[in-house]
Image (cartoon, rainbow, N blue to C red; front, side, top):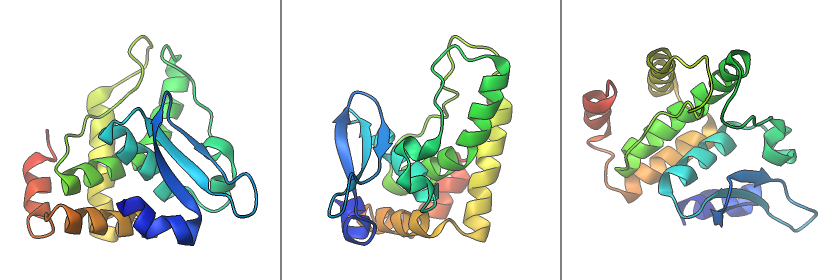
Length: 169
């Protein structure tokens, strides 16, 4: 509801629950809507997929899955480094969205069977990026969505206290 109120008409994009896999599909033609699909009905999946959408520029929003590759679990160390570099910004936004909504956040290296993961270092980078967003501002759509979450869940007055209390966990 919040996503649609903010973005459906202006950006011709809808948030869709129930996918077996998360994905983004651009509008198929004039009058059609782009689709941000999140897995099953998992709230965390919705927040994560919205975070990717909030970062994607107009050119990337014209491409399926924003033109990014996805390599499944079992990545090589080089593939994992590339994955983590691409995930810092969206996971930082997802974390901020989660705190705004009162929802749990779990960092995801998404590579249970692979090599090359350094979770403490990745968490440090995601935390630093989230703090940078708080200090310097978020991308426009992310800021709008974050503010809508804060208002809807009544967490505007306590957000920074909640963030500071939980940002190191």
